[in-house]
Length: 328
Image (cartoon, rainbow, N blue to C red; front, side, top):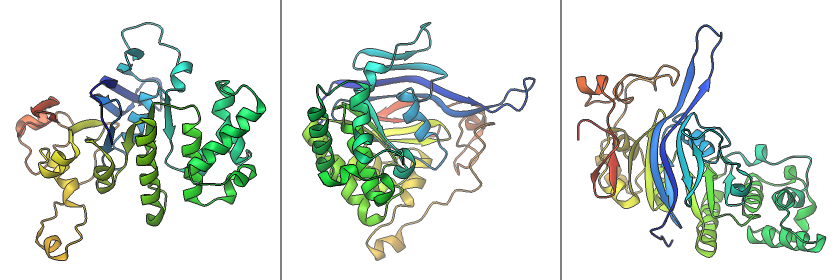
């Protein structure tokens, strides 16, 4: 995968809270994304990993403004997508052609009342990208063949396809408007293992051919390190580490990253027996009432008093390697 140095997407101090208050007298919020900052270069894949419920999907959807941010700033290719300091926020219609999403559950993301052809063509119709009926049909056939299906399947309905085929339809729909940036929200987690590698390889091939940029969200770090140029690690809404894929796997800094990597299976039985698995104690705290200081301190074996009181800064520890931890 080629990578250019131009920055395509910049996220600055992004915050997303959900109001879950039971009454107007007592306000409660889910702290889904808390002060997250990073950049994505044009043509690269940034992987995003973490436990279920850590805010990965919310972050992806907030970047695309499918969820409206609570605060922060999002810049795409020099244009402002969101800026809390501005009054009226920019209209997203034109940006939708440049930014698309592949959803986790393909069966839930496809309208069961529409044919596959109409599902793929919907973004073409919305953005008026086809000059004639023939252009529309030709584009549908081009896209459906690009993802490994046949023209004849364009007239079928989603329930007639397997999970892997449904995800291919979702990918074809995302590609319809010729986007530059795609958020891949756990695109293989609902699929059989035998199909997962096919989808990952197809995404890599398309990136090479079309110059796409990906935010690839997953909970399986072994998959993410295969496809990603860089990897970000999230815990309870916060970014705790970010580095080049090889560097993160060779030299993890944050205790939570070390825990995740210790759980990745090793094909060599001898090395697997020699390796010590790090097992965290306790459950993930509630995002409605997150811990003070470092959010990981309640489960961290190295936590000290400072970790309980002070939020660690997300800083560059080594060139290109960022982490938020007091003990490094």
